[in-house]
Image 1 (cartoon, rainbow, N blue to C red):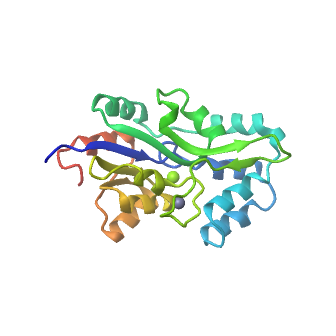
Image 2 (spheres, protein in one colour):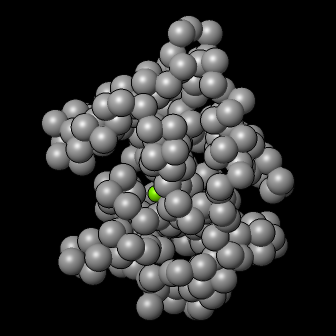
Length: 223
Ligand SMILES: [Mg+2]
Ligand SMILES: [Zn+2]
């Protein structure tokens, strides 16, 4: 039996849809004592991403919520072509999911001007009822992932059948790598692009979402 698989795209948020990493921007701007050490701990893998992101936000008082949200909205810059890319996916009946390691209180507001169903946005959640910000993890790792991701991209990708779906990952960083190995092919920039080259994963590079449209329009898909 032959049937064409439906395309599904798993698109990263920070550093992909937005030009900067919003968590890093928040930490740099509000500069709570100790945040740099936690980032070092994450990067050197002494702690998991879930532990690290949880610790980072626990440094910020819940009372500063409004200030933090306004700051993120003010500095966030959307990568060119994103709106056109959304329209392209709709026209071509490509399923587009946003898979973000970011937090709901900035991911949803930044994306609110675009027509994206909320159910298609996967990110971490937050609780401002305590003294400091607490991060919640509604999409944690399944039994196949022991990475303690927080928002587990591979678990979401695995939940789509490879027989029925052609899976494409769009991303930029180390947190997109494991998912890229599960995908049919990858649209990559920055660190993820270097890794895709090094590991010989089927991929194409992108700088803007216009490039993504171009790559997805070409018959082979991969260059
Ligand atoms: Mg990213
Ligand atoms: Zn995981």
